[in-house]
Image 1 (cartoon, helix red, strand yellow):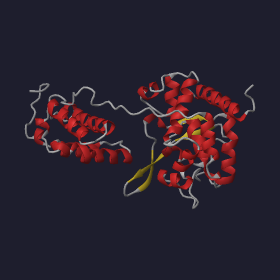
Image 2: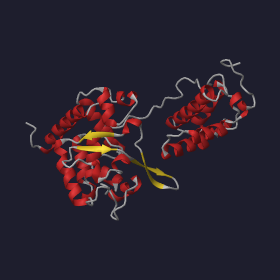
Image 3: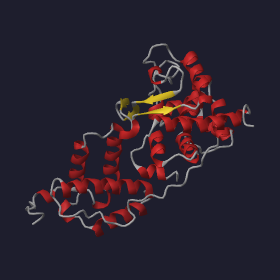
Image 4: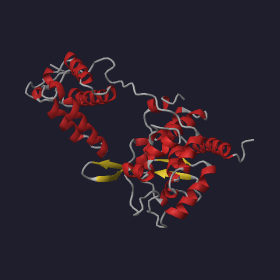
Length: 323
């Protein structure tokens, strides 16, 4: 008996693979890229070491612990195994709470959901401007806008002229590109529910944005801010090749720097400005407080204050007001 209801043993015979596949398919708000990632985790890791063929009714915490250990011994990274474990746990929570296939979730392996990712370096304002200077003119704005407004690649690459205020005081984030295997670039909502947001652009960066709009963006409201030479939106990999990212950052003495480190830097600068966790979450586009707390550390009015602090940093680098 389970909460007053009987669990049909036939239903608990469904395998992990079959159930998680159905679970992924039935999640209504999964982004295409997330759905693709979940399927990869399922077929690459959850199906491995005998777990995928195990009926839900025969799953045990011990068995899941053994599966995790085997994955790590096979060379899978702790980060990827943690993602696979969290996917399994989420699916089994549905099996317990909604489908009533299991009386309890066997994913109770202590620490299995945690990933010890190496801490990424925090770029300085000077380094971000150095990267921008090394870009071809049409892409100079990309590292600046990404860092100083804390945008994700999918968000910045999907920006259109209409998303920038006439005076370049704010940028509106309402959509993002995802790269989906077999489909190419797919436009959809931002990564999180809080991803739809308006972000203040530092005053000392606004002329850079206006200059980019004038020189490199077609006049139509729906013209993309960042495009390839043929005027089409860019994949992240194509951007990296176009600007020779790996070589550029290596030549600047920053080997191994990733594009995402630009957003990471912007988040870190915003956190150091003394803003609240809530306002930091707003600027980053996160609805999970844990993401903001990683940086230890609303309203558009408060966001303008953050942008003002970043403007001061820009003036110091340029030497035109740092007295």
